[in-house]
Image (cartoon, rainbow, N blue to C red; front, side, top):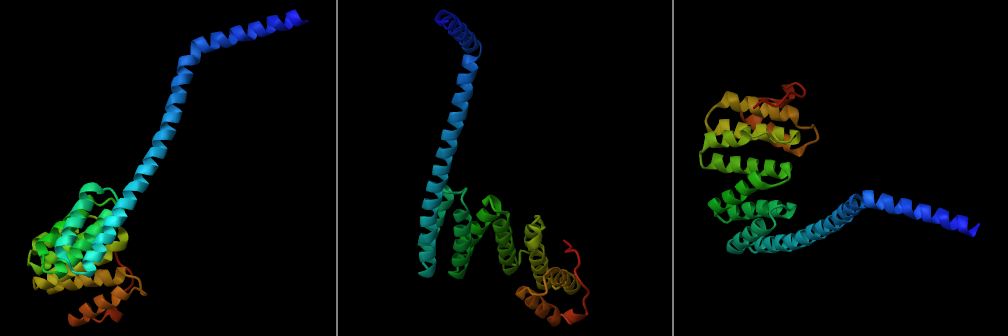
Length: 224
């Protein structure tokens, strides 16, 4: 019986050896790939957390500089953030804050540069849309009306379309194109929710052009 078991075990061992000789390399490489992927994934998560933490610290630095109205420090911090942590949401948010503060400090070119970076490089499409709306406002202020309209041509998330229509209304109004401005403001008013506070501002703009918003119909597609 013992001999029989020894032979059976020997046969199983031979089968295992044969199997490993045939498939051993493949199994080894599969295991290496699996464990390598796990290690890479863990390493990537650690790297992302590290990047986010460092970007967060720089964002806080921008916030402090904004409160102190320190334009030079803002430009340095946001420049470092966009150079080193361009892929993080903090970079886009920091650049938006930098753009706002630089504009308020009279550094319009710096504000435009920060907003342009967000509009082109931010990974979040909502942040890109906000940057384009602000850039269009700067264009209106500098009377670059064609550039403002071009900036607003870029597709935006649906929730931002009413705001883009409102901004186009501002462009047309600044150009003296009253009817075009009315059409854009009306489209914005219809697309905005009844409970949206911004709708009241659009209503004021319409009233200044002799349009009673209460006479307007319901929701309509926002035209470009």
